[in-house]
Length: 320
Image 1 (spheres, helix red, strand yellow):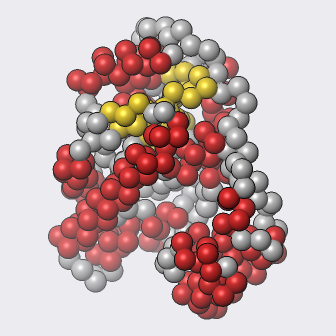
Image 2 (image 1 turned 90 degrees about the horizontal axis):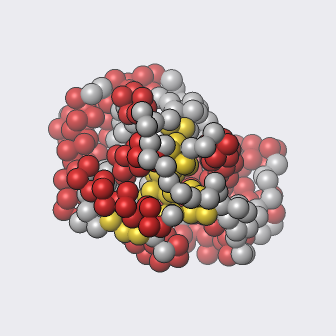
Image 3 (image 1 turned 60 degrees about the vertical axis):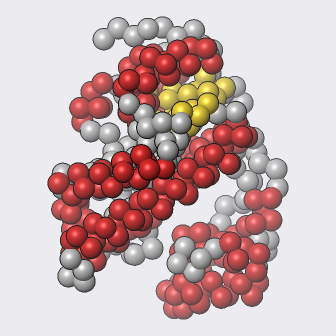
């Protein structure tokens, strides 16, 4: 397939962000085809290999149209932090550049995109023994107990975290234990800054809320038809700890409840659709108020479809 050359510095990175079900992955793929690009995942759930349907990973057919990287590269038993993803993404950006391909980073995980474009707080690594001790304490007293413990020592951070937000709760206590300083204080320090030599062209897909909600609902119904239930059944069979990130992927808690016989499938579907809509609303708010103003993103105020491809491709040429 021949691609239209794009006159850009080798260090240019296109960043496509937006809420779930907004069409951003389709946009990234269209841009990759048009400009000879490599699509690099910035979705914290699509990085796990066990849930290709439920996390709406690109299909095998999509992957034949353009190179895709960082999709399904980690097992569900692992935890992927923003720092770990950033290191992997920078490696893939470098590989794309070296091969003459335009890196196109796409995803809805704001923390990942911010880590790439702004850098991360310079928090020292947590020693393994501290991590093990904190997780042992969590096993003894549970998330509510650990949240109460954090509230005593670091009320500012505890006020920002829900007791059920286990991953962030553990991280906050680990940092406090290992450094003697709250994670909120660390995060208020100046960020490390973006990697030198990279130039970002950011686009945000931000459809009207009604269109986005309809897309969320319809997509989840299709996921059920395509085998999402079987994916969750196989995930449950692994016997993984419930606090792992993948166990909280959209649809996993609700479909797990159905498979345990606690609720019927229509109820599980409705609850999962509701969770997805709420998540999409939070994502849209974050992109509009956090990413777009800071980085001068071009905002597409519509559900992305192929009919918008010419206009967006022209936009990229002008931005480049």
